[in-house]
Image (cartoon, rainbow, N blue to C red):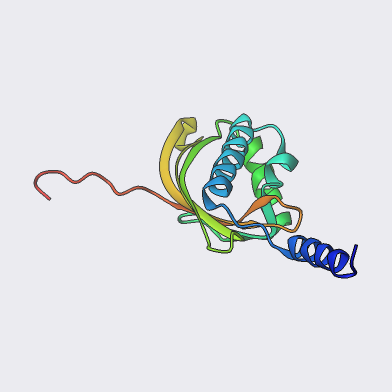
Length: 161
């Protein structure tokens, strides 16, 4: 066996080891949709604040319609805890169309959401909304929401408007 053969094998192993795996957008987007569905189910149960908050990044930003901006994990935890304690509060959402950046490190999804909250005179109000979430693939390999924003859907117009 010549010296050339072991060197060739070593070079081949080195190159194979250095090769980066190709990002598969469709697979990652599907994984993100599944992760978001798990989060939605957990939030809808309204019982585990810490597990629900774990889906946001430490530096996350929430921008609710007509509400104050909530920034950072501690503030988000307080918001979620208050929401879960509110009689009549519930939340249900469904996200769709995950789209990722070419490098696979960021993604966004749009969603439709139904909130129920206490209204005037103790009645429970249902509020539909639509939203956008921006996600980042964290160092631990988990997708976490970094921006969460929602607003009311457009109101139907009458034929006279």
